[in-house]
Amino acid sequence: MAKEIKKNEFRKANDKKFGAHPTYIYAQEGKKLKFIGITHAEITEGVENIPLEKNPEPGNKTKAYIRPNPEEAHRSSFGSKLKGWFFSDKDKIKVDEVKKKTVKKK
Image (cartoon, rainbow, N blue to C red; front, side):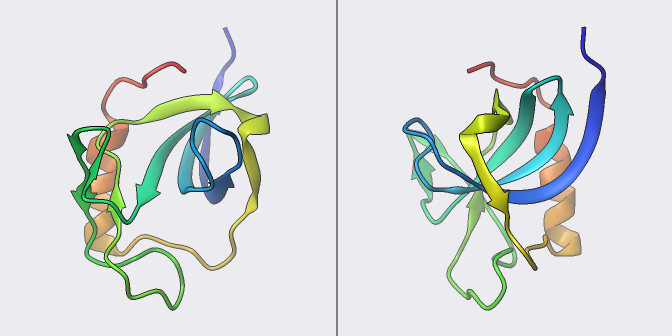
């Protein structure tokens, strides 16, 4: 089994399943990346998203949310790193709560 490597980066998803949504990637296991989706939608596929205090995209004041469950996808599903993105300290706590959950295999 591949060893999990900690990550801390934002990338845009670039496949049909996830659309062009930004994602927060927090771990890599082999060729799979573990991530949390970021969205402007309050609800995705009937599931309530978690509101963020601050949009992680620099200069964007629009309300942002994170998906309540971590996901996993092949690293080819993601584009290049997004520069300057970050979570506020309060939002990092919410992100850590989501990271503790079991990853949904895709």
